[in-house]
Amino acid sequence: MRCHGRSEKNTAKLTLNTLVDETCQLLLQLGVEKPVLIGHSMGGMVALEYALRDSSQVKALVLAEAHTHLDTTASLLGPGVLDARTPAEIAQEIQGCMNRGEASVCKELFDSLLAFDARAQVGNLACPVLCLWGDRYGDISPGQWPQILKAFGYARLPNLVFHSIPNSHHFMMLEQPREMLQAIQDFLSNL
Image 1: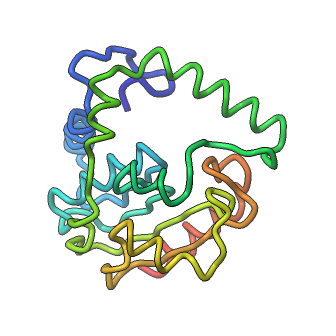
Image 2 (image 1 turned 90 degrees about the horizontal axis):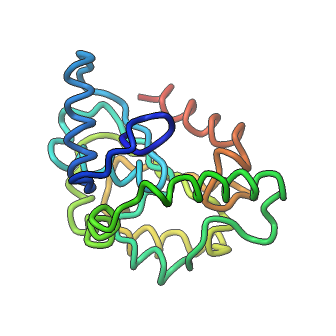
């Protein structure tokens, strides 16, 4: 996505919808039909919005801590991307990534993320969905997940697979990469 990794850092007209439009264009140019979209956090919001436009054109979604509504996430699970249990070297990497990204995040993008609210629409997804969440993001006990998934709008999905990644916070791919990869592989092998 634009403003991520080594991509262009042009923030002109950068919103969630712009990132979705650019993802559509990229997949079209590459000739990719019915993709499996995998997104983490904001990338999950992009993948989710892409699928909400027409989920019959998506083979499956893997949403790693994809916020259906940022205020709901913050009120249920709290803010933050790491905690005191995050290993120091991973915390340093996360902080470095977040600090590099701050210069590229514009108010227009941030406002569009705050305005995003897909809770009522998530139940309309026709494709299989894997929802991943770190168990330390809010220190959620297994018995609390049904209520939280309902608040996010995911509970209405008949084709939802939920997997809590143990001993990880928001950046599960850094803290528990094998567990996350295994959950994704298991999901994809059952499509």
